[in-house]
Image (cartoon, rainbow, N blue to C red):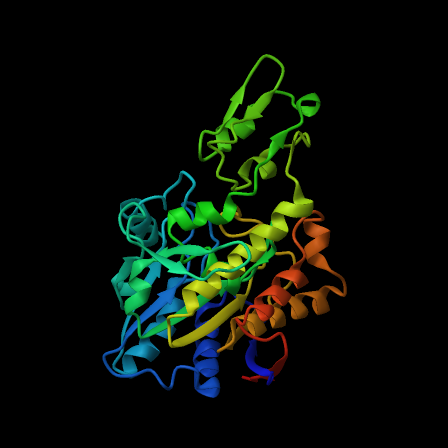
Length: 359
């Protein structure tokens, strides 16, 4: 397979919004990735609006650079995401929109509307038959069927289960409906190690599905209710909760990849942007204001979702001179296996040509 081009503009300080906007405009100009967008075409911009009170999202004024570029082409852009399966302020479209507005994603800031892709409660779903190893029928946001273009804006982070989170997770988990998200998480079922439990009850307080109970000696997890989000694993300070990482997390990654296949197969034009800025240990769903694990690297862009994630993983490893993903989450999935599987099923290639753009 021919090498995919991955464009990269270095960024030394991602907090400087005006500088970051300039560099993103330069990336758009030099890469020409949005040049074939037609007049009057409907263009979805998939991103995450962030959990309430956290800072894990791409700044609205940076998103506006993409929007304004699309509008110069006469396109009709809109921002989109789907509802989550855990309890919080993105579980339904009303709370989700309110969270987006509180984080600055207003029309005045981003110059376009917001559309929650799977409806009020995740009911706007479309079943796609793909017949892959784990997923035979995927449940994805229905509106994807009508799109002309989709642009994925992904914030590169570490991840408790998948090792890292970026484009593939933003696609596969991000555009699945709530039913699809549950399908992907179905094999992740944490268990309480009773002898280690101190009954501090923090796991009960953080569980978004109210799936944890207690008895006289320890807490316990109700497997029929558990959604496999992993919040309890992060919260427990006494190593009293574990999951069977050796099998389950690899399956989760492969399911995410298969969902990415289902989501992208019907959309003709796709463009991917990865923001390797303030890379945190945990993903944006969990990270509040964590310190960065590595200095800012820059913004990547490509037509290939596998190549852009491969380039990001390679760059982070190069900067650290070691496998930071396994260091942060020793029992997480094999990052390289996830990318290899994506290549195997035809999502893209791991072979890339890095095109550096200098300011």
